[in-house]
Image (cartoon, rainbow, N blue to C red):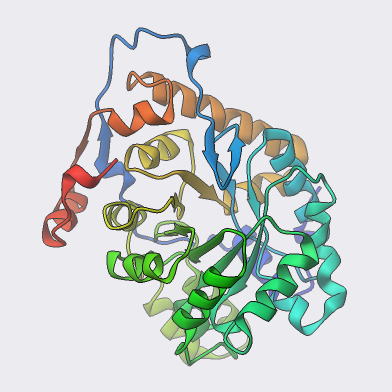
Length: 364
């Protein structure tokens, strides 16, 4: 099964998928997770079968601390992607977040491309998704409409000023977004997650979001897909050389994932989701050691699915095995154990922690 052959380049959603699959628009800077070194345990005194990485969050118990993060929906051809991803989330008992539901506000006929995830199973934990700037006209009304359209268990409000500023026809005014988030967090009645889209969350923003009453923060740091790069490529395809050059200038703009995770975990007392360039089970375990409650991935799932459902499941099975092996090699058989497992932080990540005045005792 290949999605590339079906791409309609007139659709922004499908063009995004095409670019992610074919152009490799990733940060040239790393996540900085390579500077987190778990201290190896030669005497784990446990079996691999003893490792249980299940976690309770949002009133649900998930088998693994993995989130299939926001990807797509709203365009022709995205329905089958969401259906297969939803089936994977259901099979492995992990949460899934749909792509931005903004399309529903413009065309209710696109609901089916998102709702197909819910149709996989009522027990599936499904997270809706909308941009903060898109809520400002009627925060509660819009959020309730989008949640009810797919019977979502939670909603993610995404922050993407960098992408919008580079995107053709994107938003230029972000005033009032925090107040909209505050209204939704106060009045919606289900978990409200605020997430970045690849440029990271700072401790200053994290504290603002916690004070606004959100349920969790997805830091989505730099190191994975660069949405500035995606939009730069789109601008190139349209012949807008100026905005293509601007997009390339900001290709690597953002806070590396490990730094954003440390800043946020050390600053708030609400659940934190790590994402942004997470590619394997060791990355997941390092993120958990730094205090993450869930770890999100997007493009790895999409890329493996583009090669077939069997390849997607093989990737998830391998991911779980890698997580369990890495956990056992730190002497840990649970996420609580990983929080306490020793680690060493080196290089620019250590410099960042020092310069930003982060208390190392608040990490993990």
